[in-house]
Length: 74
Picture (spheres, rainbow, N blue to C red):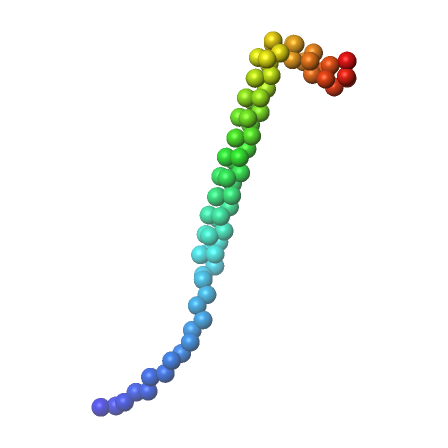
């Protein structure tokens, strides 16, 4: 029987290019989703604030009058 020498060869493992691109793509999707959620929240908050100011001032015309008075300082 012939004896064979066993040698250890270190092979450096690097991820394939398509694996890196796929990870980047998924991170962009997550970032876009998080940004969209915050934008929707800010938009909803703005609509709520605007509608409450219209209700408190007595209508849209009165709200605009109050806004003008606040800016001018009358």
